[in-house]
Amino acid sequence: MVLPDLSTVRLLIVGDVMLDRYWFGDVSRISPEAPVPVVRVERCEERPGGAANVARNAAALGARVSLLSLVGRDEAGESLARLVRDGGIDASLHVDDAVSTTVKLRVIGRQQQLLRIDFENRPSHEVLRAKLADFAQRLPDCDAVVFSDYGKGGLTHISEMIALARGAGKIVLIDPKGDDYSAYAGATVVTPNRSEMRDVAGRWKDEADLERKATELREQLQLDALLVTRSEEGMSLFLADRAIHEKAVAREVFDVSGAGDTVIATLGVMLASGADWEPAIHVANVAAGIVVGKLGTAVVTRDELAAALK
Image (cartoon, rainbow, N blue to C red; front, side, top):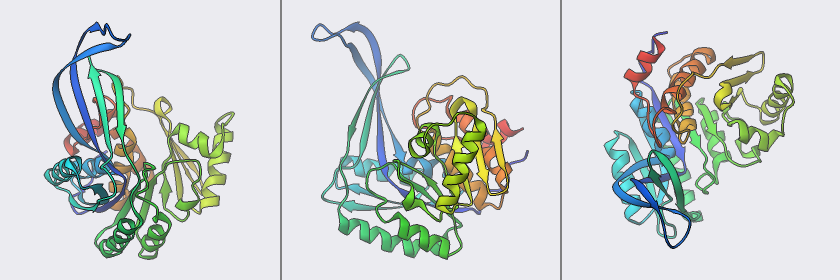
């Protein structure tokens, strides 16, 4: 299939942002102090993570992207703002003096992740209210809204935001977190991965059982659709009148971190461009197949995606 022109698509991404730091090094010995590898760090990298990675993926496909989130008044927050700005994203990052910017530090030796260290705390009520007001102001200038929930507290007012967006006739996509999805009620589509679906709906015995559980959840939350991403089993979209299954794109997998960001960014851009569900999830599935072949939080460019679709 031919990838449509996505340059006129306007996407608003809202959610928890983080700074992904990578320390790459060589491992040649075990520490004499404890049975752990010694990594001699040779280079460091910083990449936007969480909702910022969703925004970066959408921008890489050619969409016009706005990002709404919050950071701390610190060096990590400044780095994240710079990286997002350099990616051509119109970012409104509210600064909360009471928190530190969320940082995930990954130590990589011989292309293998050896350790991850997380730095995080929850935002203050005042900054969250200001963010809600900013959301209402930005809403008219977008075709679709993507909520990227990483459970860091930045989407405390998501129910109000969904109601505002749907009231304005916008497509609303949600990458969920936790085992209670009641706050997501009324969205267009929610995109849990396999383990998240199990957390919220319980285990399923077979495909028919999964479809029954997905239908129950979709109806309970009054969603247009529920998309379950299933790793090597591909992805399944459950609509009111049918289910659509996409097989996984066979690739050598290096890293699945950030694959969900790529899926929801691609799906959001496609739906906002006017695509139907079937081509939208096909393109999202192909994009996921490309990104898992890259190390760390990464993006799929429009050219890579167009070539893969041919």
